[in-house]
Image (cartoon, rainbow, N blue to C red; front, side):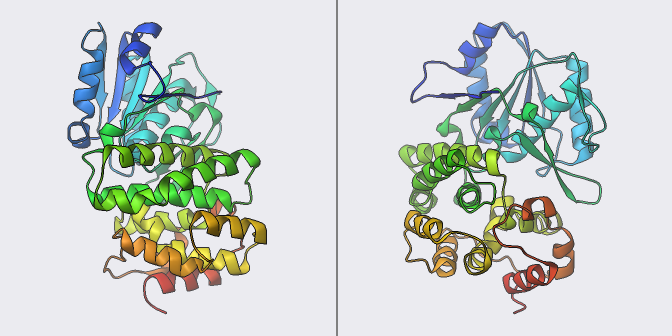
Length: 363
């Protein structure tokens, strides 16, 4: 399915005109709790829908890292409301929840079974991201945590939103810290797509486009945001999402999930913690052709001291190691083997434990 991208820069289409053209009468909004107002999403939705005769129903009863119970509530909510369309407007967790609610509203099957059948409830999904980072609006998979805080990735071509609307102004109220977290997540996705075992000519083009938009922009937007910089971040995050939609992510994302689920470190920050160490490991022990290493170093404006370059970059945007009592074995058990399989270097349990101990300061 071809996804339709709508931006204020190169499209006359708006959310309001999209709703009117398709004659959607009942729209389910999936949003964050407080972020819906803080980001300006509430004002945006009210403005776009002010002259349209529709019924809106809002669902926001889920955690920052959605779990299976949250999803069940969302599915029941959708079944009671019976929407013509679903709009997910918010950050990465909102995107994932909107994607999952739509998928399981239109498909039958146990949530974590991996076996699903299409039913008669086909409704379109419109994704409106309010962070420049996760790229979830552009991917056909979504993250969900089970009762044991173990992360699962549910994947299907039908999870991909039909429409993406990029409105950079909805990112204007993000703090410097959240801008850094989301922005580094996007940058990490583009790099991980580029060194990925599953990289293709198409994913390379998306990853390169994302890195060119994000790498120089992120430190600037963290320190002194402007509308132009915010627009570059939104576009870069989208293209990074397009890249990992083909390749999926690698070891830094695989390692990040237990830091988030057990220590409540925001996802992008958790990815940043291990990134320099894993990049160094991949460059020294992974199968990355020299030509590709050189191209990546050129994109990252480094002479290929990859560890130092990324370590200094991450510190410059304020993502330091939080003080905590970390259990390396707990982190080790939470690593996503699915994501690890895409990494250019094989990382066994001893390698992983050594990386974790370096990150938490035990080595």
